[in-house]
Image (cartoon, rainbow, N blue to C red; front, side, top):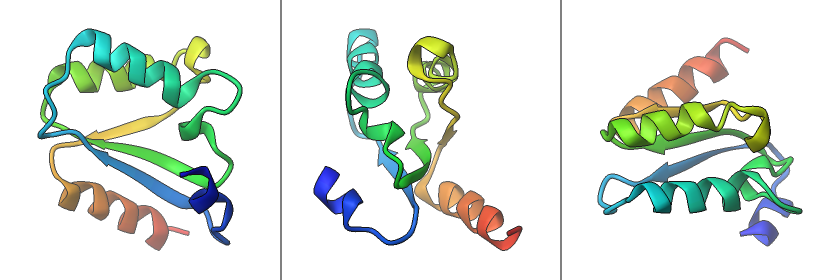
Length: 97
């Protein structure tokens, strides 16, 4: 994944659709640690402009809010119920630039 990111000329929107996954609280904590902390956190990669999660679970929304804390690097993660809604948000952002 890092090689793909490094090869990009423009910043990317990272969309992770977790609607079909069976997630526990432990799974979310582990994912948050891998994605946002450590020496090379993927979601904090300089080529990633914004991170989006696709889910209808309240637990995922709460986890996304938790990522905005200093321990997780003050990440701003967006959560939408469908990929289409996330893409609408991305289009809105791009059109406003």
